[in-house]
Length: 362
Image 1 (cartoon, rainbow, N blue to C red):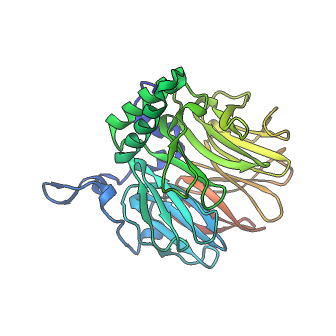
Image 2: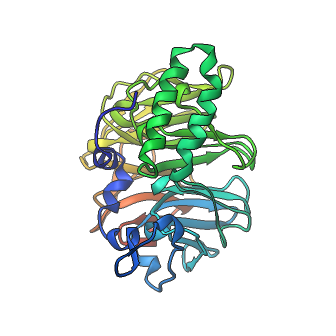
């Protein structure tokens, strides 16, 4: 059953949401005095300041970069982060993550249960689903399954009805597509949907995460050949394709985790108070990695030469060239970061509350 806690708590635990507490009132409410309009129906506004506005997620679209953020803004760069062009987006809800399984087809997700899709490399977007309809999709699905008598289905139906009643109050936090048809979106309070037809239809997976307390799901990514989810209060799940569900992964940490990164042979998870752990056996065992920074680690990536880069929500950039055995703090800046993407062996794209910029690590 859905945990009895405020959305604000989930937003704080959900890291990116700590960067979203400023500047949303105008986006939420009115286009003229006394007239309310849902930000799911208000297109994102074009502004010359988009590149220095609050931006939250980054992904690759073939050889291009895509960033998403506050006010429904999406920006594209075709020159490795030197210049950015704003996209046409049908919502002004804050967006927090994106993913492109092909150079042209991609998805972005965010607040108000927004799921957006593009077929032209991110230049133009359409809304596939939002929080006004997510509950209807979930209730319809679990009502069809209710005759089985499975208590997990009954619990999922209760949660689906609550989501339906609450409307677009919960954000999706991350999205991952393994190809242009098959993908997942995850979010607050165990929100999780799967599509097998490129987002034309969505199937809820509430009962497939072993998450009875409905902890929030913060990030999902492929690491060392496995698809992992990390979330609130130490939640780690790995996709078991034979069981067609996400199964629990034991870790030595009970605090919230905000990211998962990996490459062949190693998986990293990281979160509150600078905690970071590595596994070289696909999550069967974990080793705590030491670094002297106590801020929350919220994003990670790998440079072309294999070095690990982690960023914090306090402006730290940490680099390790020995699989996390030690870290060098290369840069401290004002403002909060939300994520990072590699450019080459000496530079990264940093995304955060002060926008997006190309940053040298030399």
